[in-house]
Image (cartoon, rainbow, N blue to C red):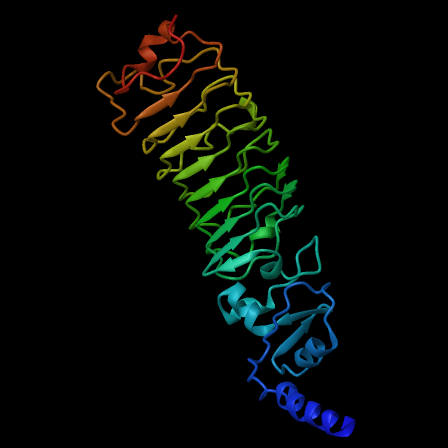
Length: 293
């Protein structure tokens, strides 16, 4: 009787525990972004079978991932930056001619892919711009170095950038301005330490496309000379400007002269009473913003 019960028990139990047909599993896809991540044996085996992976400077880089970050094949040979062993387009983000190197604590301008048009390197620790930084990148149209620690810009650093239209050096430690490229439309040097002697007399004279000039929150004692006719917006607020002349904005020898393009001049926060210099504004369509009493 015990034998029959055991047999019946097995007969009932076996169908209940018989294995179900195996499910079809999706292949596991692995892309490596962080070289410090440890991989299990199965993932490691799968990773080693990928024939298109490349090894650069001891760092495993998926070719597909690299192409997505860089935008085109020409950027694969971008050399490592001065502050890291990673190539520029892995440390930064490179997309269709734009390079984004923001808030990554670099201390120097990174080597750029050829044909870079837009460089955003804000909020880093860059202290110096060398002439060699842009010697071979003549296609640049916009550069933004806001929020760095730049104290020095080597002579000729921007001399070959004949297409450059927008340049921002705001929130740095400059005491003088570099020679600026001829086609600039916007120049921002707000919140530096620039004094009047740090701006050459003809620094802006030949910039016939310059429309927006921002020099607020510096240490200027006077308004820069020879401002171009193209200028629309001029910010000089919170400097040390104490006087202006009839020729600062206008032409004292030409009473019919009008600055037709000038829309805004900000001079608040300076130790100057603008009401004492009425003739200095005779050619303007709008009075400067500032103290008049």
